Length: 71
Image (tube, rainbow, N blue to C red; front, side, top):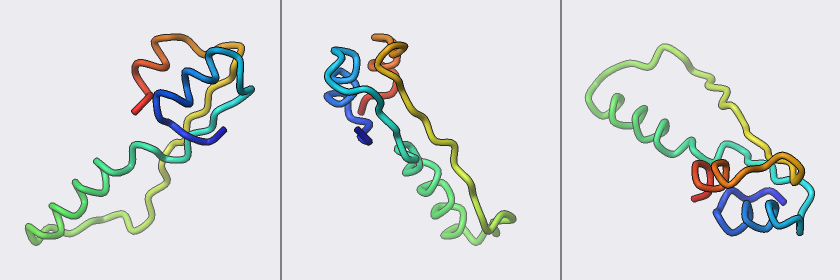
């Protein structure tokens, strides 16, 4: 799977999926911060931003992962 909602992580934890890759699911707050800076007349020094991606394996995912990363 490639979804970061809580349901998908619960499916993974239940063993119904093998792996769940999350492609930059939490970038919205960072993008919002950049937009606000630009609207306030600030400049952004970095033109390219590389966001960390996260993935979970069915054999190692924990309930804490589901609670922390499921949206």
